[in-house]
Length: 286
Length: 304
Picture (cartoon, rainbow over the protein chains, first blue to last red):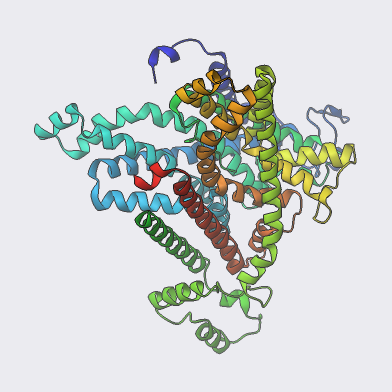
């Protein structure tokens, strides 16, 4: 990966980052926005079309089946889904980098155990593993976040280990070891900074994947539980009313689409096409 | 060659044992099934008798061993809701899922053909358009894409049925939904491999011999390009199998995925675990087949 190539201005990467940043900021700002109560029901506004007005107010994006203000619900849903996804990516990132570096630095039985666990996890399709564990351990928001994080560390772990394997033989690491530096110090000061950029790239791609996974689980009824909204759950709720008001299912999907596209724009710009594996390392998930 | 096969088979066996262990952990973590199984007015003695009958009074390691032994005989327990074997229920649904997976695969092959045709015709711009469409599709969650297709082709145009299985028309929308999800990935690998192969001497020689563009592409380059494709297809089979769960739910397709999701809502854990385990086993075994096939096709693999 040549640095000069990436220091240039790239419209798609900038657009992707801007999109993601805008969504994150909006999600953070949701409680501050002048929105209506996302739980208040008004049967007159049930399945109202976007821009519908009642005597007292305007439903900018219409209402859902229970007549709750759709814009408020969608904003809250985006906040919920983004919160879960960001936290899950954080969990898998920390876990994957830590396990990968430990495996690659110490080698031996530790490495065999960690990578064996990773291989085993890859043998069970991620969605299925998530469905089964969500069914068994329940689907509170905390559990959902934890499960999403725990099932997504392998991608980071594998690359971190591979990089650690070569880094540990480099002169600056060997020099530090001969001078009595501890393994912990070496991992923290020498390995971590060197793998960080690549881990960030994986995280930017994985973010989109985790958004889709969370949405899929919630769509299947195994993720976020009503009355709390989430993007996947809202699509599910709207499915019954496709013929009456398709917007209910279309709008949350557009938000997911924007998030995933943003995440792909950012990660693709920094992943060299010419690596020969044609993006093999970036296998989508659902 | 033999040692490669033996090593690979052993590895697959270990993975299967690991997958089954995960299944055991999940089943045990789901809690005491006796409370779910017995009627409301059952006595403590009834519960104890049932626990003994199910082997739940044994120490954990004995339970684990008997779970593994049963699993090797093809028994993953009884469904809580229907008094039949969980494996049987999954097997009943397997043909529908296979049908969907094969149809989705056919969509991928069709797209390949299109890409090759455009490649031979030399229309780079059209190929770019196809790739962009595929990339856009990849950013769309499968279940939402399915819904959009239903909205367009079933609700608005009324051309195709939205739900269920039966006629070939029922297969079109789910297969398209599932088959297009990973298309971008394959098209990009095809592009990268073609670009890489075109730099080799044998391609230049083929052109120098006076062979036509179509012949060079199809007879000389394509066989070399197909190898990495086979690997990617094997690796991504898990994604395809996972994708069937969501796709089947959207289109009410009566396959294994829908069975799993329904079993979850009924707390029928043996069926959930049986569905997940059997799907994973198919995945592991097919990957083994792909790897062995690869060794047959490419001598470098078995010698390494």
